[in-house]
Structures are given as C-alpha cells and as structure tokens.
Length: 468
Ligand code: MCA
Ligand code: AMP
Image 1: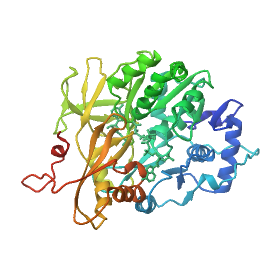
Image 2: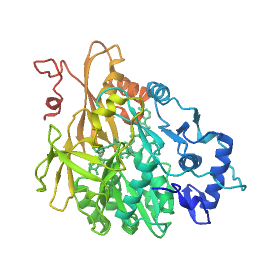
Image 3: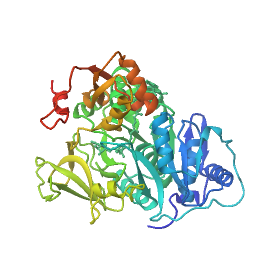
Image 4: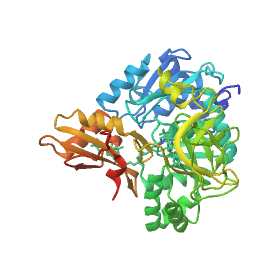
C-alpha cells in the first residue's frame, strides 16, 4: 500500500469534497484550507495533535489536514467531562490541542499540500472503553485506514460519485474513519450534519444524486418512526443508493419496519475501534437482516472457543468469539503493552470479545458479548467500570453496579443499581457522570436497592440484576 491517503488532494479539482450547513468546499478549496491550517500549525508528521471535534465547518478540515500530512490526530468528544478530559490529555500527551471553532477559515493558494505516504506510522489515537479502568488510546496506522477503506469501497462499490451523508460524531471510527476519511479516499464527498434530526437528514439525502447514508441502530429506529408517519421522509430514505447501519446490532424488527415504510433495505457492517470494519453485507448481495455479512476481502476471521482454539463450524448455530487478523488490526493501545497483549496474540489475531455464529457462506451473525461490563448504548461503547468509578466518587454511594438493560431506542440503556448510605437524588448521580465523563455515559435510570446480589466470592452477579 503506497501513495497518499487522499489522492484527489494531490491534484485537487472543483468537485465537492465537504458540505457542512451552507458551507461547501471543493477539493481545490479543501486543499487550500488544509494548507493554510497546516502552515499555521507548524507541526511535523508523526506529532500528536488533539482536536476538539465540535460540530463546526473547520473540524473536518483539521482532521483531513492531519490525515493527509501524517500528523497524528487525537479526536476529542467536545462534551468530555472534567475527569475524562484530564485522563485523555495526560495519557495521549498531545503536542497541541486544537479547538476548530477558534480557527479562521482561510484558503492558501500557494504551493502544494504536503501529502504523507500511507504506511505503518500511526495516524490516529482513538479513546475506547474497556470493562474496567479509564478508556485506552487505540493507535491506528495509515495502512490500517487505507486497507480497510479500500476493502469497504469494494464491498459497497463506493466511488467518487458517492456522497456520504451522516450525523455522527467525528471522534469515533464510524463518523471519522468511514464517514470523513472514507469519502475523501473514494474521491467523493461528505455531507456532515451537526446533529441528528430525521427531517434534516432526509432533506440532505435529496441534495446529491448518489448517496450513502451511514447510521447507528438508534438512528434507524428513529428514522423508521418518522418514515412511518411522513411519506416525504420515507421517499427520501428510499432514494439513498445505500443505507448502512453499524456500531451495534440492528434488530430484524427494525429492518422490517424500514422496509415496510420505505420499500428499501439496510446493509449492516460490523467492526471495532481496534480493527476498523471487519465484515459487511455486500452491495451486490443486497440486504440480509440479522447478518453482518462476510469478512471484508483480505480480512481473516475465526470463531474461537474459550481457550481461543479455532472452531470450524459453518452451521449458523455454533457460537464462538470473533477473532480477526489482517492489515486492519490496530498497532496496540498507547503506552499499554499489557492491555494490548491481552487482546492481540503473537500471531496477529485480535480477540474481539464478541460472540457470533457463521453460516455456510461465511456470513457472520453477532449474537452477544463475552462481558456484561461492556455496554453499547446509542452505538457508543461504555465500560461499566468507568461509570461505577464515577458514581463511587459520591460519598453517599456505598455500592454500585452498572449494567446495560435492553432498550428499543438505544439498544442498551445504562442502568445504575445503587446502595446508598444517605440522602442522594438520582438526578445528582446522573449529572455527576455526565459532567465527569460525558453525557452519553450517564445512566438513563438509577435504581436504589438495599443490597446487590453477590456470589460466594462476594462478586456482584450482574446477570441476576438484569433478570426480570
Ligand atoms: C442530555 N444532555 C446532557 C445531559 N443530558 N448534557 C449534559 N448533561 C446531561 N445530564 C444533552 C446531550 O449532550 C445532547 O446534546 C442532548 O442532550 C441529547 O442527548 P442524548 O439524550 O444523550 O442523545 P440521544 O438522543 O440519546 O442520542 C442518540 C444518538 C447518539 C444521536 C443516536 O447516541 C449518537 O450520536 N450515537 C452515535 C454513536 C457513534 O458514533 N458510535 C460509533 C462508535 P446535543 O443534542 O447538543 O448533542 S465507533 C464503533 O462503534 C465501531 C467502529 C463501529 O462499528 O462503528
Ligand atoms: P467500539 O469499541 O465503539 O468500536 O465498538 C465495537 C463494538 O461494537 C463491537 O465489539 C461490537 O460489539 C459492536 N458492533 C459494531 N457493529 C456491530 C454490528 N453491526 N452488530 C453488532 N454489534 C456491532
């Protein structure tokens, strides 16, 4: 794999590259905006620069400029709370922290954009939650990104004619790597919406001839509800060339609702921050509700048992943990060789923690997760441990157990079971998590209990908390 990540920026023309609100940047304008920004930044390739990913026009410009020039981005959730921000900034130790809202958009007409060659060097540090402890920085290389995007382009017949439309945050793989980098690597455009509103998303789909709609299941659920009530929205959703869902499982029920309301289907794909995207239903195969499709070309996938021994079954029944090997697998967790060794073995296999079955044709069905301590809510991964630690900061909280309860809208809803040792309001606990971690990690429900169910070893039995 060689050449620049975004080859259209090497010979920029007047095709649209980025659209945000009323702002449209062509490739020529994007190249000039990147050049002006990079000249002011003065950072060298390989340097780590953190970016507050505020929903503003300069955020994708800054992130594209870094990726093009080989500067390592550390994208930050703009709603990060105090404790989480202190952790990430100490852990990543970026040379600079950029707030794109403070940048003057400028176009520099002189010279060419300095474009880095795609290689093994890091391009991104993405913070992702584990079962315990604070989030870890997953180090992703340029090769990881380029390989994965090219495999996805093949799977979706993704080309320069396509405009990606999404309302996802730019501090995770989905919105950033697939949405922004993917659109630019294909030589097409990204239309980024600053917030998720079904009617605006539907309108945006009507503004370009060939669109790819990227969504998480919570968005699909809400779009289906709107489409059932509004024929214009249904028609707009029906007109997208492809509608993709990922970041969490899309219930078959939601596939059916969308099909009934819009007459079209949704393609699912599956991945993780550490591996980028691993499996996708192919555009040529059409929708396959309940399945995330076959591994991408060049991605090796195994199902393994509890001892990490490969299972050969292709019966769509036998369940194993998904393990992945390929150029898409990350470089490791920043500064954490021990944590990296737990998930990445000496042969290059990455153990995902996801449980799945495999059909005769290799298509994968994700059926669960090894740990009850990882929660996917609204497509965001949240570690029960980090929420529990935040709640235990409250002196009135004696004990706490955080779990993900099934939720029609969010997939899973964060529920905190709290044993209190004094007066404390549920709202105060919710606010504590929102302000120390980030709002999407806040419990949606707090249940005060006299005691937590424990086994003979004194370990909290979370599955019993969830039992009806
Ligand atoms: C609410 N808000 C608060 C509080 N409560 N602010 C401060 N304190 C509080 N206590 C604010 C929120 O910040 C937000 O502000 C607004 O109120 C609504 O928040 P909320 O109810 O949390 O939002 P929601 O309606 O539940 O959001 C649903 C969503 C969101 C839009 C679907 O969950 C989302 O964007 N999900 C995308 C996740 C994603 O990109 N995952 C990819 C991970 P405001 O309205 O201003 O924002 S990458 C990955 O998983 C892999 C690689 C993969 O496969 O993709
Ligand atoms: P993250 O660490 O935020 O990148 O989340 C990765 C996790 O999201 C995976 O380990 C899966 O549990 C989940 N995930 C992503 N896409 C899908 C999907 N299409 N179906 C089921 N789970 C998914």
